[in-house]
Image (cartoon, rainbow over all chains, first blue to last red; front, side, top):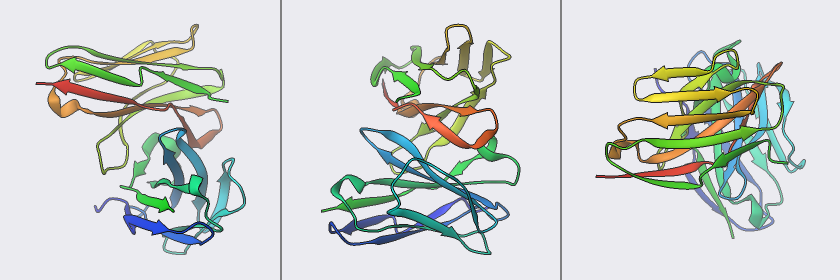
Length: 114
Length: 113
């Protein structure tokens, strides 16, 4: 099976712009989670989607949003970018019912905000 | 509030040596403790995990030791190899919240040949 894929792999944006990142889970996986990874804060949970519904959300401002499509592909959007949003954004997928016990991460999208 | 504290931040070990990374947690509701390995340009990958009902779990050269009373757990890498050079993250998941991992801040391990 192909792994989790994320596009684009690298992105440079200007402060104030918005950005959309894409994640394609492993075939058959319906749960998709997003994490932000920074040197200072490490990996922090953003949100989790299952069957096109956001089931859980981390402690991030409303500028961070996401959605999931009927084919389980997911996108996350960050509006009004700030310098502090520069990070590696990781997507992870899980088979139904397995949650964190069987979570597969993609390679991430490296976002740089200038 | 950092719920999972990981140390050291970086570690240098000679080939064949033992690498030890420690984590401490605060929330007694955590019931699942995985370790992830991350190579540059890759996402984290599950290495080994433990539940609090056992004190140790071994898989090949990797061992987790778990001390429930001290709220600490550690990863031991025996016979460390240069190919083990990576960033290691401990994590924890809470009862009833198996969708979310709380991660430590990571340890950069370098194994010198």
